[in-house]
Amino acid sequence: MKKCREAKKEMVLYCYGELNPEEKSRLEHHLADCPECRSYYESVKKTISLMSRAPRMTVDDFYWTRFNAKINASLGKKSGFKFYRAIPTAVVLAICIGLFVYFSRPSGKSRAELRVPSEEISEEISEETVDELNYELLIDFKDNIDRELLNGEA
Image 1 (tube, rainbow, N blue to C red):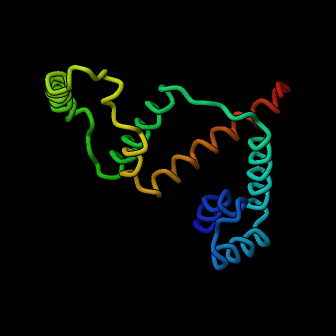
Image 2 (image 1 turned 120 degrees about the vertical axis):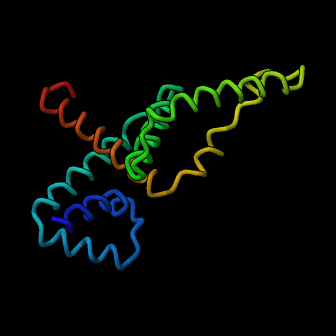
Image 3 (image 1 turned 90 degrees about the vertical axis):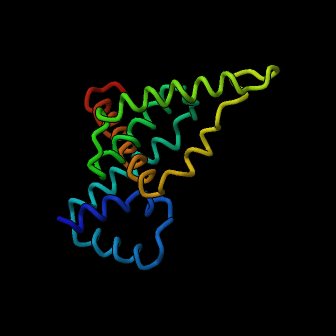
């Protein structure tokens, strides 16, 4: 069971040829022996094929809000941190930062020019967290496609 879970996490990397030779060999041996994972691999491969044919879309700010919420939730689960306990502190901190930014900004600059680009924030996120989120988003996307195919909406 543990091998299957690890194999499923590596499937996307395998499809894109991003596994090192040792990992690739281990996954190929597992796929040869495990019909369930082989079926899952075919499903992932089909999903990636469908995604590659889909037109590229731009994402709105709501996407990044959800993305950040999932990261915060993921980080909170691992450390045992209770988010609701930090809300009063976060509110006070946000007000202080807002007042600081408002009173310290140069008079000729707009608020949009003072925003921190999301690329700088994303550098602080571990690759493992991003991989887990991408895996979750890929599974959600695959499930939606499977649902559409079953309902005949595709």
